[in-house]
Length: 108
Image (cartoon, rainbow, N blue to C red; front, side, top):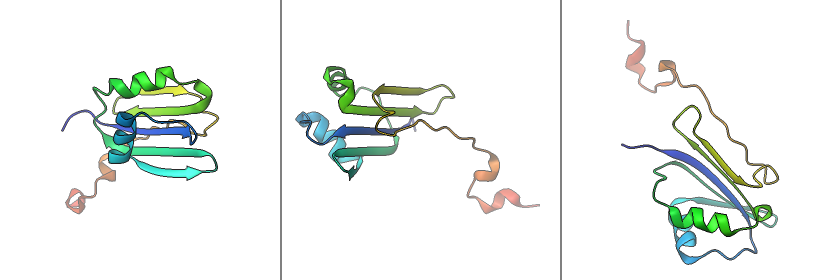
């Protein structure tokens, strides 16, 4: 199974994406556009070993993008860029046995 994350990345649509970053976003993320911003999101992805993406972010002006990653751990939240201006906010929730879809859970 492995460790999984949920990610949202927003970037002004006039910023050129390197080919490897574009391929990653195109292959795994859902794209939505609002005004002059492209939003890319994905749920339940293994997010390790993507140093090329992190390097790309480190070279960008923080005003041009927002990035939020929420992992499985209680305090595993990563943000970068100007995520607040792009209205991307981390959100965590509580999961209980009652959230299971298995109807047999309630057998008496």
